[in-house]
Every structure is written in C-alpha cells, then in structure tokens.
Image (cartoon, rainbow, N blue to C red; front, top):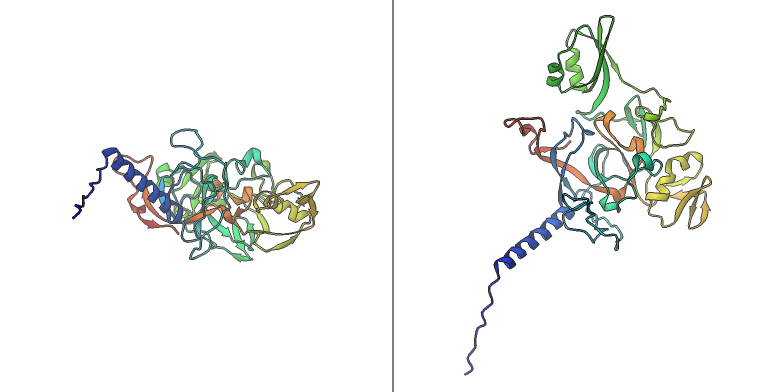
Length: 375
C-alpha cells in the first residue's frame, strides 16, 4: 500500500505575516472609507458654531449612495497628495465613468453635506481649482444644503426663502452685528457668550463693537442694560461692491451680494431652459464645465454643443446650493455657484472627537461634543 506523505506547509516568515496583515488592513480601510464611512476634520470656521475647528467627524457614504471610483491609479488612503509631501498621490492615465450606488435617502434642505469643491470657472483667479484635480479628488468642503435641484432660492437681508417659504436659520448659525453700549465691554463677557469681537471704536461717550454671534448669544447680550442698540451688519440690496460681488459674475441683470440675492433656480436633471441673456449668465459655466458634456463651449454670447449653437438646453444632472452656518465667513454657493450631484461625497452624521487648539492639558478635549449628532 502506497504510503501517503503529508506535505507540511512552509511557515510564513515574520515579514510575510506583517505584510499580509498590512494588506488586509489597507483593503478593509479602503472599502469602509469608500463605501460606508469616512473620517474628516473641520479645518476652518465656515460652519461655526454648528461645527468647530478641530471637530473630528464621520461622514456617511451610504445615506446618499457611495460613488464608484473615477481615479483608480492612486495611493490607497490618500486624497490629493502623498502624506507629508507635495507629491501627487494619483495618476490620471485612467479615468472611469462616475456612478452612484443606491442610497436610502437623498440630499434634503438643511442637511450638512460634504462635497468636492467645484470651483468657479467665472473667476479662476479668485475661486480657481475646479480643473486642478479630477472630480473625486477635488478639495472637500462641508456646508449646509440650502436648495436642492429645482428649488428657487432668494435671500432678503440674510433671510433665506426657498420656493417663497422662509427657511429657519440653523440654531447655531452666526451673523455680523454692530452693538452700541454706554460703557466699555469686558472681553470676558464676549468669551463667555461665545461672541467674537471683530473691532471697536468710541464716539461722543458711546462705544461701538462689531461682533459675530448666534441669535441666542445676541439675545443674552441684550439683557445687559449697558447695551443700548443693536444693528444687523447688512449689505443693502443692489450694493455690488467688488469685495462682495457674488455669483453670477459679469452680468448687468443681477445685483447679488452676500446678504441679498436671487431669486435663483437651482438646476435639476431634465429641466429645460431657454438660453436667453439671464439664463446664460446663470448657467453657462454649469453647461460648459460641470454638466457632463464632452464638447460644450461658450463664445460670442452663445453656447455651442458639438460645434453647433443651441438656443435651449436640458440639464444632465441635479445641482445643489450650499451655504455655511457662519454666514459672513463662509466661501459658498453665493460666490461660486452650484454644486453638481457627482461632487456630493456624503452626509455628515456625528462628531467623535473635538479638540480645542487653545485649550490646556485639562480642557484640550471638548468633552461635551464627543459622539454628538450633527444637526
């Protein structure tokens, strides 16, 4: 009887064990990051006080549906650059069509959304970057969705109307105010109330402060008898000073600014428009840059598709209008326009860690913000 000899497997080396573990971790992390949840850090104050600088949060990809990768030649777990270098982390040799997997909801008015910044083709000198990276690698922004596809958006002295209905301000949104007092205000009071002082001056025994505050903080401040007057720091309708010039640019038909703009219709997939002077001003960059057209150009006051001038146009995808909760310190749709659907990354769901850069050893962590839901 033939004797069966059991072959013994050669044990893996320590290096091979380490390599297999690392490879499994990278693959698992890449799948989780791409399909389910991704961690982000808030770098700027455009969403304060709703989200604070150095809030660490998770963004859900499953709410709206994860996007399939477009740029596949990329170092895993990177974004635009290889860690701690200026070396690009990707190659554009292969660019795949972009699809979105099924989600269980869609972007709603009021959602806090992470998206790839589309940039502003109208002002590449000021709001450039839309063509610097592939769509899925453009810079990540986080804002609140004010208008979804098909909505008509209008701002009247900072009050936002969606389809002629007043949209409530987020509870922690901030705006600029000017206050008048009959005495010098202790900076500790501003700090206690979470108010940012932007400047001050005195005149004829009166003290004037420029502040950035939430509505609740302003209400608490007004309970002090030394506050004699409060003025909203508004830019009047029709005032288009260069610094506050807003989207769309270069048209005499619009006089939009930071506080007063619209009405503007947010493009919707299947929506058909006549390319008159007004619509060309609003949508020419959408059609020529973002709406998935292979050959669309604007010249001599007309849109050309595949070399032919067109007088009507039907949009190929949905768009959104985004604004930061820190309304006067946010670079958003008021200045560069609409966010295309294929730029949507996911919904911000909860904060898992928050650090105060100015805190000491004992109050470095903002404990009250840990594992809090984003509203």
